[in-house]
Image (cartoon, rainbow, N blue to C red; front, side):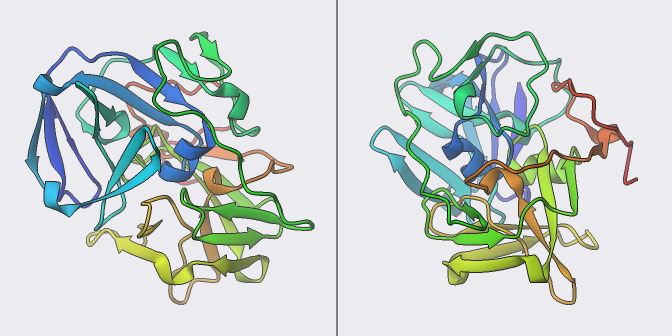
Length: 277
């Protein structure tokens, strides 16, 4: 048996081992929902899954006729959802040490161009075989002269001036549980290079009580990621998976790799730091 929880701990569940098929999904909808470079999910039979708390805390969004997505309304972490006779569980929220995982990558034709897939797992440009529940949908047009980003439902939109001065792939346990993914990918923009375009009033924030600075922002309508503004801080933290267009740059480093998920292998050549550089 293994257990999972959201970032704030309100939503908790148990699953029976062994795990089913693991999929790394690079579609734009998963990137926007998680605010991460890609989403990693695992199949669990309905009979092998049990909620232990927090089901009433969930908000749901119908991202397509075939797919319902759910998040914790307190912290924005992605929650498991039922698909027929199976549960689709975000691996980033599983608690404990797992062996390295990986069955396949799908929707790699839609992957973030700055993300490197360095492993030898099977890759599918579109859906994996047997995955007929949801397909990629077109991304909204990019505004000329600016990089535009948005949440999953498109209600929250913003623009940034270009590549961020600081861009980190963060492997801390809080980023994994807050983004429900293998790791976060955070760009830090000066306030002058960031602007809200729509939906600012829909953005909800959550700060981990015991953390000095760590926080998460998300759209209260769809649960998708959102930029995080903090009082008396001269920059905005942007989940780079939200951008609608290619960025003429790449992340600068992996940080907090001492806390990296046991099931994930870093396969690129970026510098790695055990904590903060």
